[in-house]
Image (cartoon, rainbow, N blue to C red):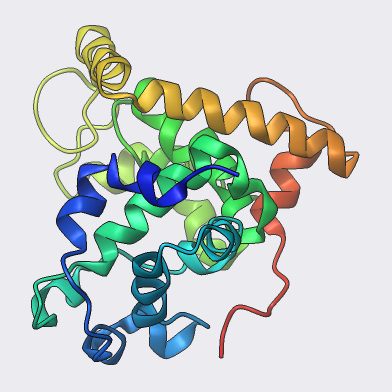
Length: 236
């Protein structure tokens, strides 16, 4: 078994986020996620502070670390200056690195995020390109969204948007040069390596689940599974 405590300490976010927790529970009291999900940042911090490798491994494989919204409310209230949200970031990164994220429903959704929001950065230059959000994949948006997609240029230009047009303004076309620079930033900072790691472990998990996996796009069984699956056991 890995020394997870040591591995976490190699992450500057963990080092900065955990000083000395006195288990007061203020972080849980202020946490929006704790109000709705089976999530208690106090317990997470107490667990990682204990250094119990077996319990930390369970945490890395659990749904728990994916409930945090990273709003940083915890940072504003902790009397010891801890930031549980930074600890969660470190736990998530380690979970992905070790492939443990595929053991939980919410963790597997990292694959869907990578294939959509993540790849949008390189494809369009935006995390979320409004004109690329498919009505078929987001039925919750209702019929109005389909109208907007079908009339994207007219709708957004009324609000000052410059859809896929070079120059300035929202929704403008991002040049190849800028998108290549974004890709270079990911290469240098480890983002590309993380994306590749998500793909590697997701492919393995798809095989375990007997689901089709394709190296590109969202037209495959594994993507649909992780995108739509909901055990409905996450809220309290």
